[in-house]
Image (cartoon, rainbow, N blue to C red; front, side, top):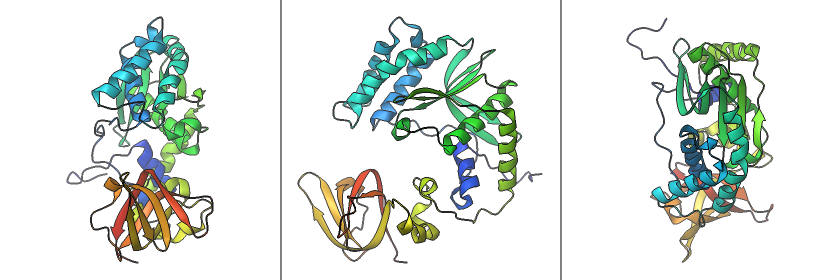
Length: 323
């Protein structure tokens, strides 16, 4: 029993995935709350916002749902002063929305359910919560998770299967019935039905409860789990392991030189390896020769010798103390 003076810890699908894979990376929440409003700084985010508005407003029932979804995409982009033409993958994402809209509309129209988007559900007894992209409560209850970004091209992974099993439990805890359909909808691949059995939900809950009782000081570095871990910069077991990965995506070392271009990008010589294509705004304060830097979510250029690395849109650089 939790003492009255101790606030309970709330766990999302992502946090429980981390708890089971690498306890050191797991961070619970203080309450089942919505995250800050989604921005529109990339094509996937714009598409996600457009899909949510289109689904909840019932525009999937229009004679030409694809054209209306494209209009939603343009409206969201304009509201955030974003230009889809200049946005990486903006044009192709906009085109995929129209192509995939009919498939998604068929799924929504075929269910006898009240369609909702950004639906916050929780399990009070186990302190679990999640926000479902699209869901319908009723005799034909369903869950749809939208994949519009980098994960839209991949087959459902163990992490996605965990997420959808977790959401199926929240649906059942909230409505007293198991969802009839659990669907991952990818802009590239279309809908994929995820088979979630009640026994899988029971197993997952047992695993989560057991993990919550253990000390969260065990780091288990692996590429997939570490990639977007919020503790990655300071996790020494990760830095010890990453050079041996099949495709390492992080480098560290003393800064030897800084080069800046007229195009607004910079290059850093980190531990004798050039990291290029860094937006100036991504350079942290205090970046200077002699300082120790760590960079994550970077890509090695074709096994080059000497090593050259390239930054991407998700690259993060920190100035830290040498180990």
